[in-house]
Length: 389
Ligand code: MG
Image: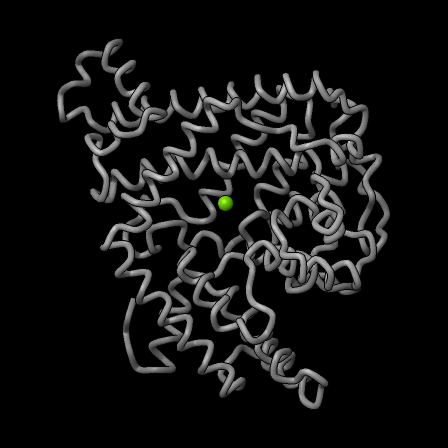
């Protein structure tokens, strides 16, 4: 049961290369299936979310993170009458452009590319599905629908939006210039992303030993549910039951956020009454937390930033990850022959072009961004003789 403001696959703005409809699947189901089968999706299993892939088998990876975003997104979409298949497609693709080694990798690659147009992971996710996947005889990329691509491009700088809008007039770059919103399904994926990582980073942080249940007492959003759980299940005061207490508190926290988003968004929808997807795109952001939950979620983010993402032990490994990315970038730029064949061919094709160096640098960035953590580590060792990670 789709609401009037939901994306309807029958009304899609379509694909860049027109294709006949599939006999049994909607256009968004088809997008989701293309994403699940692509190479970049499989690589997510060996890419860092927060903890480097080799630090432990049970930490989230980009893949399990994306599955959690899809689960939360679908569940909220269903109760708001939004398109679940589109939400799932966007959620599964939203991190395809992430470099190895999480944000450290992305920051390092952005610095390497500062003279050549920079590196943004959202834009890179779009490059993956528009250009870098090579699976079809007739075109590059996965040829996804406008609505899925719109959701994948969560943020985009004005400079990059202008470039995008030149190659695709009125396309996915346009809204950043017009300052309008993406579909509600896309807005939902942004929020589901935030709900997912706030919760799983608590879990992974505690698992790593870098944060404790005692530290978490500073965070109202978590601690209210920890105390509620202990009142209902006093046997969880036993330290040996710490994991059950942690999971039950996180479970309650997740549910509270999901119900809060649903209630707050319903209020916004009732006030704005969008009668179509385009009316929703021209309204202010409608998919949101209530004010109280927004503040609590913000407080949790600040906690995670100070206690986890900037923990000295995390910063030490991310420092090494930056060096790996910088060394790889310099090595491939100097010797394109060290890259895999397809990238070497693209790099060779840039010779004599007007902006030869910057095109060659973009090929190197595409190659590095696509790497898994362990492949990047192995390549670094092969090229420099140093084993950093
Ligand atoms: Mg994400």
